[in-house]
Length: 421
Picture (cartoon, rainbow, N blue to C red):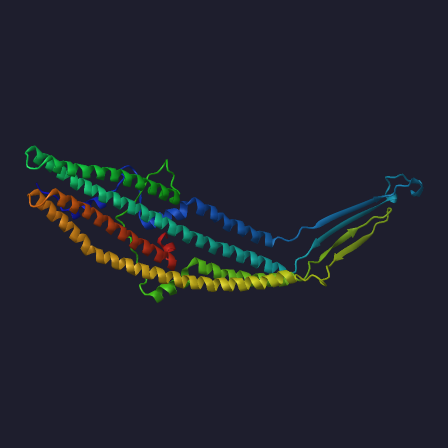
């Protein structure tokens, strides 16, 4: 009986979608784009931008006028004007005052500019939240890929063993082998069945977690990952180039830079607020039937309080923002160095393991061939089968670590945000 080479079976099964029902298959960039659009946490954070933008509207509003009324009624009847009663104008005084506070031009401009800068700062903060979310989604996608590959490997091993079990059943009926050999192969097959059930449950759990991150309705849409898509994307290979790219595109750095600009505008605003707001208006004051018209003006004298505390605080906030920028730059340099070294190490591990993988497949093929022709024992075959499965699983683990290191490199450089565009 002829059998397909194990490597061809593995290659064939790896391209089969696990779920046969109607579903959406997501490549990594598609998953990231879906998360940008539908992730419930990110959609909640998007409101922060709109909330902060309302401060711009508030900053542009001018103070409302204030209407003040004071009415005084004469209570002693003997003091009333001759031939008058209590409800006559001659026996009361009325005060109507209409005033409004006036923003100084520098104060108004600073308030509006400060609100606009804060809105831009919140947009940078949203991009940083998005970057953090995308790396988590990418890792979840990769975990689903890892669970699916492990399941496929065990299924390949089970299919390979099932064919041998059928052969051994015929060989046992013809009394070519002992019942013990048949039972050994059947026992390993049952172990594989248990492992398949475990891997299937793990795959479903990871897929459910990914579905939540993508914001997909569980009841309405089935999803899967597209393992056929190209995973690796072009990035600079030199450490200096990666660092230069990060210093121009990482959202946390852009946030820190914008925070300094906000601090500078805040200093201008607090200095402008040293001058109190003037209030002015008109007064209509009929007294005992005699009308009076006047003006009203008040100005707080900045003798003791000149906003000194807020001004001093604004300078400290700027110094804090500048220190934060330095901390972020150091963090970026460290993270890129670690991510770059990890990526290079894992890439070398993948290349080194290729030979081990080929040797494992060749050994299993040779031992199987020898066993079916009586050249070796069932013990040797089962050992070769276990070693093959362990090697395949180990190789998948190395591929997982390599791709994980690549995702971390994309995250460290800020390029992960471009994958979802």
